[in-house]
Length: 126
Image 1 (cartoon, one colour):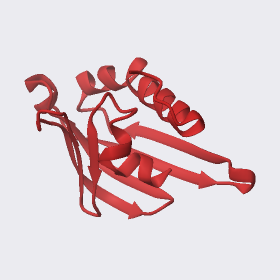
Image 2 (cartoon, helix red, strand yellow):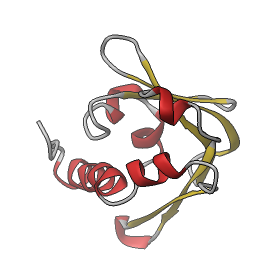
Image 3 (cartoon, rainbow, N blue to C red):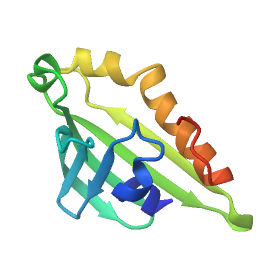
Image 4 (cartoon, rainbow, N blue to C red):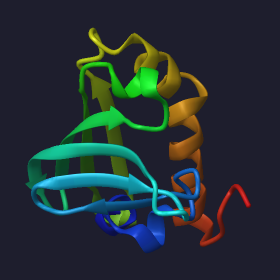
């Protein structure tokens, strides 16, 4: 699961086709043209259990002008090969456009794609 949320090769198969790169201090999302779409600082880096980073959407000037928000990924591996993933996107008070963008289909699309890919080995969206 950790590799799925931190490596570009894996993330492009479920995360809107973008490549996520996560290091102990930086979070970035880049499209095939090399354009930065989301940028952030890593606040907590605890492989393979927890990742917390800031989030600034750069794919529109209005979103880029908003305050940063925060995303927390909590990975809980259980017996029998079961893993629980909790994603919390908060601190959105100063980012109402970002909140609207990531709610509803935003994170639902990403997490559904991740679940399908991990369970079947095939991307949900082509």
